[in-house]
Structures are given as structure tokens and as C-alpha cells.
Image 1 (spheres, rainbow, N blue to C red):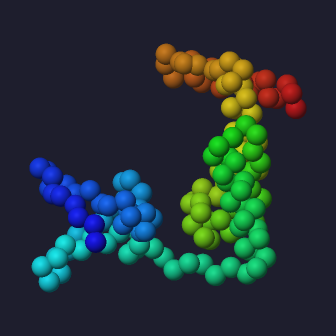
Image 2: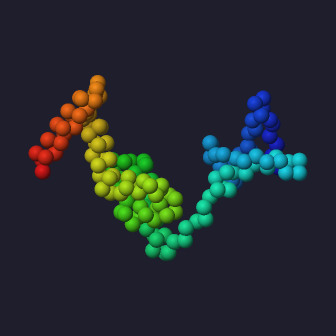
Image 3: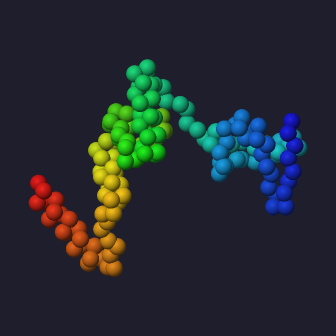
Length: 150
């Protein structure tokens, strides 16, 4: 059993072995209780976690593809590919992504993200604006440009 010391602000350091065994992360919340003269710390995320979604073998394969794409989007957004709607729905079903943000992870949206990131990298920027009128004028100019392309 590891020993720890209470600091001046009532803080304790969780021993590394315990921290790792519980898969804790910096910033995790812990519930503190006294049970029979002992301090019991319970990771809050573990007590509130919803039951795992049941997936078919096909859905598990789709989820693995979605995980790889999500990792790539997070690491290399310009070189990544967005999720199909089916992949996004399964990723949301397992809480890998927020169900209210499925749209953001789709290929359609990620294509726009890649275009914006590429333009920013190339130094193409719009703004900053000193007032709302300048912003609106810029939006109208952009709309003219898009209509001319179509």
C-alpha cells in the first residue's frame, strides 16, 4: 500500500500506480467520502458512465474505421478524411463523439474545414473588421464571388 502526505491546502498526491490502475487523467473529478474512518475517493466519471452500447460485429468494424479517422482529424486536419454519416452515428452511439456534433465530423463538413485551414496556411484571411458594416460588406462580396463561380 502506497503512502501519501496531506499538503498545506488539504491536497494529496495520488500514487502513480493507483492513478494508472484507475486510468485517471489530470482534471478528473473524484467523490470523497468517509467510510469507517477511511477516506474513499471514487472517480466521478466512473460512477456516472452510461452502460456501454451494444454493437454488432459490422458496427464494431465501422467504429474502428471511425476511430482511426477521428484520430487523424485531431492530429492532421488538412490531410484527414471525414466520417460517413453511418460512422458518425455509430461513434456518437458509443459516445466517442458528441451526438449533437455529428455534422462536424462528416466528410462534407471536414472538406470545408480543410479548405479553410489550407487558405489560412496560405495567408488568405478575411478581416479583422472594425465594425459590423465592414463584416456585412465582406460577406456580400464573398457571396458575389461564389455566385460568379457557380
